[in-house]
Image (spheres, rainbow, N blue to C red):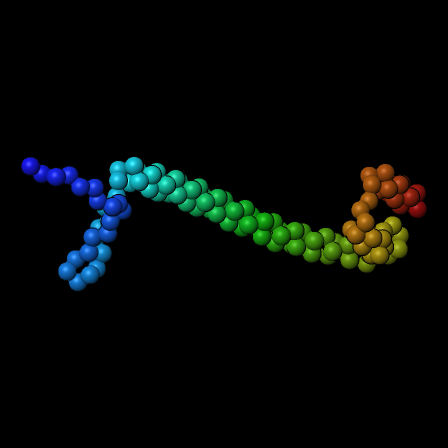
Length: 120
C-alpha cells in the first residue's frame, strides 16, 4: 500500500551542481502566472504601439517647426523688400508687426490697417 504525502509547493528542483532546473507548483498558481504573463505581453505590445505613434507625432512636429521657420524667414524677406520699396508708406512698421506677432491681432484691426493704407 502506498501512502500519499503532500509536498510543500512551490518547490524548486536542483541538479547535482546545485543549479535550479525546475519549479513545481500547483496548477492554479501556474495558470495565474500564465494569465499574468499574457496580460503583460499585451500591455508591452500596446506600449510599443503607443511609443511608435508618439515618435511619429514628434517627427511630424519637428517637421512642422522646420516648415514654420522656413515660412517665417520667407515672410521676413518679403517684408524687407516691401519696406525697401514702399518705406513707411507700406503701412506696417517692423515694430508693429512684432507687436502683432507677440500680442495677436483681430481681423477688424487688419481691415482697419488695410483701409488706412489704401487711403494714402
